Amino acid sequence: MGKVKRLYPLKFVEETRVLDQNSIISNGFLADNSIDDIIETYLEDFLGREVFQYYKGEFPLRVSYLESEGSMPLQAHPNDFTALERYDSIGCAKIWYILGAEKDARICLGFSQQMDASRFYEGCLDGQLEKCLNFIEPKAGDCIYIEPGTVYSALGKIKYIEIAQNSRVTYHLYDFGTAGADDFQMEIAEAIDVINYTPFDAERCLFRNVSGNLTIADTSDFIVKMNMLGKAAEGAESSNGQIEVSPEALESFVALLCLKGSAMVKDSDGNISPIAAGEFMLLPANLKQAGILPAGDNGAASSDDNGQTVIIQAYMPQFGEQEDLYMNYYEDDSDYPEGSGVDPEDEEFEDEECDDDCCDDECCCDDDCSGSHECCGGGSHAPHDNHHGHHDHCHDSHDHHSNSHDHGQNHCLDHHDNHSHNHHHTTGGYFAQSAGSGVTAANSSNDEMFDLEKIHREEKEKGIDNSNERFFRR
Image (tube, rainbow, N blue to C red; front, side, top):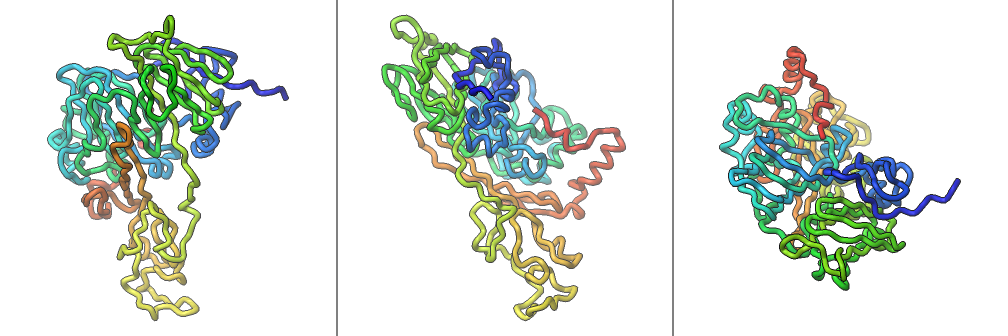
């Protein structure tokens, strides 16, 4: 077998507006191949070892130039845990960087007040949901962090860059100005326990007039930085007006987007590639070093009208050791790891019907046992699974718990601490009440509004495809 050629900074065909697994390379010996093609050959040398293993060889980011006009349907995305459990996909967090917006443009971000599932569903049906939504007027330079579970939309003409997890799961929930939820009823039912019903946290997720050398987002899903050439760059060595980036040290590929001006990228092997405003470049993970230099004669930067060349970097964080919460069983509830969704003080994990004398060496439980003893198969529960005993009535005795999905926002040189947000969901019913950032489960048999089987039957009678693949939308 011949020696595999070394990788180099990759450029993309003209008019590429989306950088994802389908993007086509335009330079070097890999020209005319897609990112997916390259991953098949170079594996972790391209993505990074941990990134390749964590995402199982899939390209995990999507960077896009987008322009919205009119009314985008209200949307939301699940977190990683829910997306993996239900759709064998990753979830979707995203960053919007606003390039420009017309005067009457608006962006919907979450709710303006505390909501719950019932009020949300009713608002979708009667067309009155807009009264409960939070709207902002976007301006160039605004940066918005859209967490999984946040409902969002764009109305009017807006140009923006989107940096997002490369998920195929989107819930379409509501059309503005249209009463009735017939078109989205199945997707509303799927999303009802995913949505964050608390008021939108503007302090943590909305930043105005973002510029300079700073970290826009430092989360468990991606890291995004902005650099201006010729200025000391936060998070990267800078000398002679250039930025030094080391994908090998970061253990991740680095996606570059030239926002303004133009630059030259020189790698450790001496390859030099230009990048101009609106263009993408991708630095493979096994690239030791790359310098991003101002372009132009005599070292003068070719820049925008304000004299700045602006580069956006996006790459993946290091994940560390990932504990398999499905396989790890714990002798005591207090041993469950943080983020497993198990509260050792939660009364739901205590047996209310059996006393300490209920069981001895052999199972002596009768039909009144709720099945939380070891002899009933319930002494140790696996996180995320409904607790089941051997008795029929045990199936509804405990709620289903999901993990908490952490999202940290490290913005403007670490001015904000990392935060976590819990997304709980059940399999036995949908949520009818919200408490803080969590939710309380309601059995669907007592609330026909969220009877998923009924919705499936009705849509089937109408000839509507109600398979899960309807929600795998890009």
